Length: 445
Image (cartoon, rainbow, N blue to C red):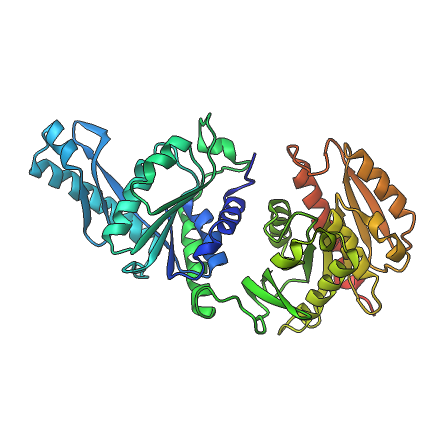
């Protein structure tokens, strides 16, 4: 399964849309399932989020055959060829449009409330759904956005058949699709969690996005100054001579914040770390996912395995976090995967680090053996039961730990925890460990 849920799909889609971050972008989600995907894209691009509500105009005697589409702002698009072939009269067209217009306006009011529709004139409209099967709704949305004045139309989806993507290239200036399986049966096959998106969820996401838009600075500019104690968005972290992009999420009432250290070949967009971060956020914990290296530094493979350098970046991010308003006294935890686990333990061993807890998932703590004896933070090592080589490395490393520690083996899991239910199990173990050691009873004095 390429996607855990729609939020995961949205974060991965956002990583493919960074070339648009300097344009005047509006992100438009097709309700309902497209909105959770679009919300992640809008947040990553620091762009406005809205819905694009369209209704197909079906031929009266054959409703599944579209003769056109309508959108907000009195937009109407008619396919004259279909009208001619099936001999639909203007009165019949008007009757179908009146019925669909009433439903369109009802849905728009339901989702948007009293907020006005985001204007598209001269802007880049990114139209997003959770996937495409036939493409009829996506095609109508592209045509409606164009009719509403969009200067450029980009259609972006997590999954669609390759033939459909090719067909839609005639309606959009750019079509972006993460997965294009030849044997496509249904969108839901490509999600581990494809539960129905409710109207209330759509409404909540739009309200949250509107609030974030009011609070943030100019679109496309990462927040480089102090982050407020309640924050969910992109940040730029000062780490010596470089700035590292990241995503900080904290409610202002979180008992602590977990910093994620990704493994080699990964980044802050790691879907597995993102999944764990969502589980921690659901438990009320703050999270900070960030890139440990700049794109230029990543070109040198030696940097990827320089545990001292990576640990230093993690320490820099910790100091940056503690400088943020409202977070000076927050408990800090580290979650490391693969080589990132070694960096997390190395950084936790630094004098005065005062890290509340460390969790390693499929990690390489053996790469930090020279520092393990001085780690004071309670440490949980999570390893897949079928990841035999790494499991033995973790057992060896555990013998060097003098702090409170535990080794949790997830049955049936390999190194990437890709087997059904295994990543959920690992995330739950991490959540329980951080919740336990972020509690006041475990505060250092």
